[in-house]
Amino acid sequence: MKLGKEDQMKKDIIVVGGGVIGLFCAYQLVKQGRKVTVIDKEDITNGTSFGNAGLVSCFGKNPLSTPGIITDTIKLMLKGQSPMNFHPSTDWKLYRWLLKFATSANEKRVEKSLALFERYGRLSLDIYSKMTSEDKMDFYFHQDGLLMIYTEQASFDKKVKISQDEEKYLILSKSETKKYMPCANDKIIGSVLLKENGHIDPGLMMKELKSYLISQDVEFLLNEEVQRLEFNQNKVSKIITNKNAYEADTFILSTGWNDTLAKQAKNDFLMTPAKGYSITFEMKEELRPKTCALFADQFIAMTPRKDTVRITSKLELGTTNKDVIKKQIDSIKHNLSLFTNEFEMKNAVEWTGFRPLAPDDMPILGYDKNYSNLIHATGLGWLGITFAPSIGHIISNLLVNEKSNKNSSDILLFSQFYQI
Image 1 (tube, rainbow, N blue to C red):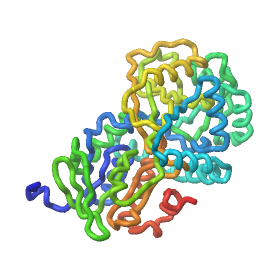
Image 2 (image 1 turned 45 degrees about the vertical axis):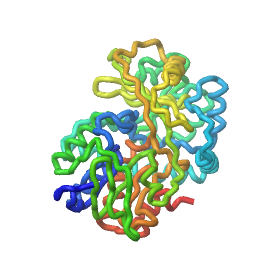
Image 3 (image 1 turned 120 degrees about the vertical axis):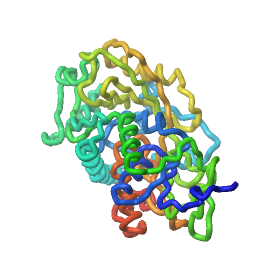
Image 4 (image 1 turned 30 degrees about the horizontal axis):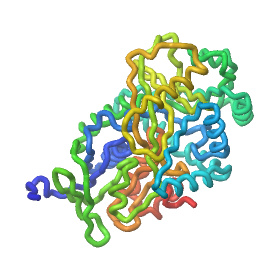
């Protein structure tokens, strides 16, 4: 492969992957005066980060691996309302993941996760706020709470019991809940508003962030797929794409669920692709939710956006089929219809995508154990929108100031590299 002079120039930092984590790494590094190149196999207009619910849900909401999750899922399966589908696989890594997930679902782990979620969620909310006020980005950022709607008396009572702090929680009756969720029917029990949380329109945010980075002279190499890493002793010497080859001082891998490049660097991260679905549509203004909401017993999120509403649900494990499966979309609609009055989903757009899901809700962050100029930033599952700003902050500080994993308290606390 013959390279032009410009292509042979060594880059400062190359971020591989233009999802929400990759773009926030670029954003924070630019803030610290570094030169950044972002490479993505697509054009950053409709990736996984665009299909997210948009929740910034870091306060008072349990992680995925929480006590009772397996029993609750089985109960929903028996009722035909389960948000989870498991496809039997010959990949033993998936079963290792499931075992780790089961052992992580304990009170001690949840207590630690909630503390970390609050720490880094608060940082994310502060960054989102500054992006709108200082950088003048407009992505429908609202910090008006997350409404947890309950359809089972036992789970509602349990949530109410731990939600007595009036500064953080607002307990709502059935009729009060309907003021926030006008389309809810009488089968709901009540709700708890987690006051500190917020939401954004992820598609708008990705477009605004990309435009901002372009204005800050971030180089984008789009529709270009990185196929191979090359190594020289303990460093990545260059990356090879389907179009060219590039050298850099530092490489950041933020490739989501696809761990092909990480494996080339002798890693075998315990992470699995989790397939989720969303339906985005227009609905009558008087029926729109007043804030983002989660039907907690069905794991269905419903989020107001600037001109539309989005429903997100489903967790499919053991598949890499990229197609929208009608059966899954119909299941989401059916499960939601059990607790809402009939309404029209006008101009509905159905979407599916994969998220990189770690078994203990802890992301994979930090310098590679084998190659000193390679950094990993992935594994957040559907919490990417919630923690992307703080992850960008952590990675930027690591690279610019702390220089190694052991010097970073954030890596020691939050990265899966240091979890037991």
